[in-house]
Length: 219
Image (tube, rainbow, N blue to C red):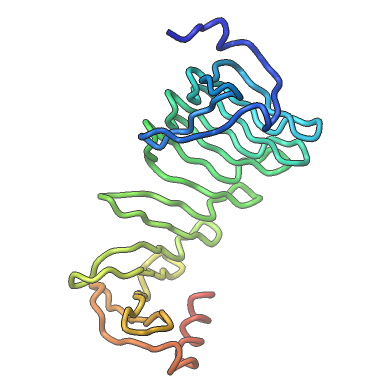
């Protein structure tokens, strides 16, 4: 049983005082120089400043893990339980504003992972539904693009959906690495509203068409 009193002791250490390993569940395991599992509330010092703050129990992260920038401001704050991400994960800018946030339970993300602009509006949202991860990009507060990987007629593609100013789908594209091409270049596909392939473009052979699509996607 972990000594709870020891778990609350605040101790300053350096990166030379411990080693981080991984167990069979892909959890970080912290051991000291004698290869003992670490327990306590640790402040990792680097060049005279706090670089990380760790709460460890039996070698596993269990509590808030804080990461500081070289300039000394809090850049990340992650919540752990028994070695797994469990709770909020947030990133901050130097003014302390949240620039990304997500929530985990037992190491798995739930809901959306959101990146914010300086004004506090969402720039991107990442969500996972039915095993597929979608990344949504916003302009102002309007959805402009969604990117994800899925199969079309049994073949895996990276799919890009482009939306207009009222968030209606106005274009859809797909990319697939051509295995037969020794240079590993991609082929670009145009999809209809039912996300079926209706045309294709070779970037190498049709650079002007690709440039037109690139300019369209930047609108």
